Each structure stands twice: as C-alpha cells, then as structure tokens.
Image 1 (cartoon, rainbow, N blue to C red):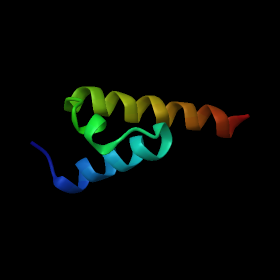
Image 2 (image 1 turned 180 degrees about the horizontal axis):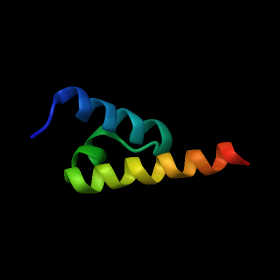
Image 3 (image 1 turned 120 degrees about the vertical axis):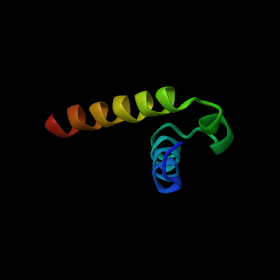
Length: 50
C-alpha cells in the first residue's frame, strides 16, 4: 500500500480529466490507475506541444 496523499492525487487527476466517479476509479487496481494517470499525462503533453 502507498501513501493516502498519492491515492487522492491519482483519483483527483483521473476524475478531473476523465470525469469518472470516485468509486469507479477506486475499483481499479493500482497498476490500472497508474496507467491511466500516465496516459492522461501523455495526452496533455502532446496537446501542449501543438
């Protein structure tokens, strides 16, 4: 398990960008949640580069 602050940050990030519910996000395991964080960050980087 990891720090609650990190979990809150991941949930907030995914909820903000993907508009998913807290429960849906928390149903993901850590690897899936982290993958979505990584993918959203990559999309944001590409958008900012254009």
